[in-house]
Figure 1 (cartoon, helix red, strand yellow):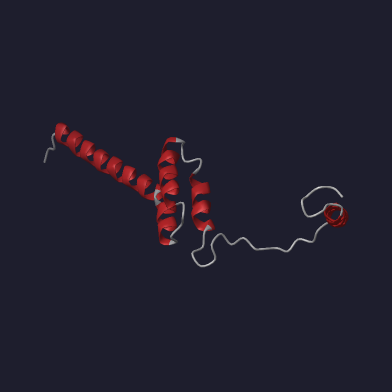
Figure 2 (cartoon, one colour):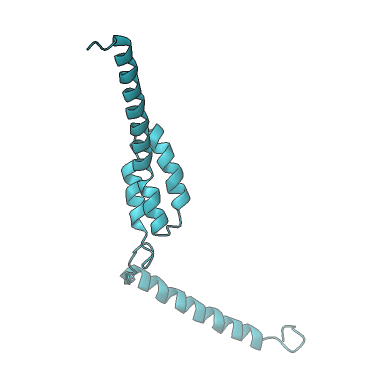
Length: 125
């Protein structure tokens, strides 16, 4: 049995084309994973993640891990997961606040004095 070499060339070319198409599909599928995560979690930036996934194809996949993290940062039940931490004011802030309160009292006192010094027509007595 003799197989013509030209036939083997066409078979090899067909296998090459099928593998190339498969690899392109796999690369696109992998780059859509962050978008699919964002869509599943109802992420408010899902369209930006999708566009950045396409940009990542042209940047040799350098930003793709950050897209994955970005997609996972948002949790639909908790939002961004940022805790609200009570911050105690510094001593300097407290001092400035006391000074401000003292100034407000002084302004009110001066306004009262000024109001008492005027008659009903608004002229100084």
